[in-house]
Image (cartoon, rainbow, N blue to C red; front, side, top):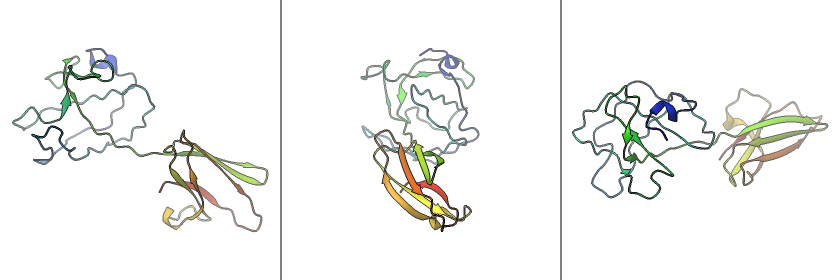
Length: 186
């Protein structure tokens, strides 16, 4: 990693912007490992594509009297410089920084399976990716696309494979009205 912030950002995406207010005592202190505080929800969803992940945090300041507000690891900890690294500066518009502690961040995500639906002679075949490996999924069906998912009928339940993929085949029955299909996670 470079000490120049922009050099570490290949395809930067702004996910949160604007004022952020965190209530007093949201982050506890004085334990060897403190529990995480409240989550900061992105304004723009971000789909992680794998590989190295760089996070750039900028803020105009804080009214906290303490500078030790987040748990962190330093350059003497195992993995620093190879698995993780941090650079910090003390001005909002800084373009470069110096080696710093790495704040320990909790990242929460949701799987977002994607599917392709095709007709293969007398069958509808649904093939998907992006699910949690080995977890359950449900194929839901409805004749009315506008209904909430809670009113769709489950037609199959199975497990994603070890790579988060699935395949489902449904025979087309001439006596049934046209149906819409979607995948749902429990």
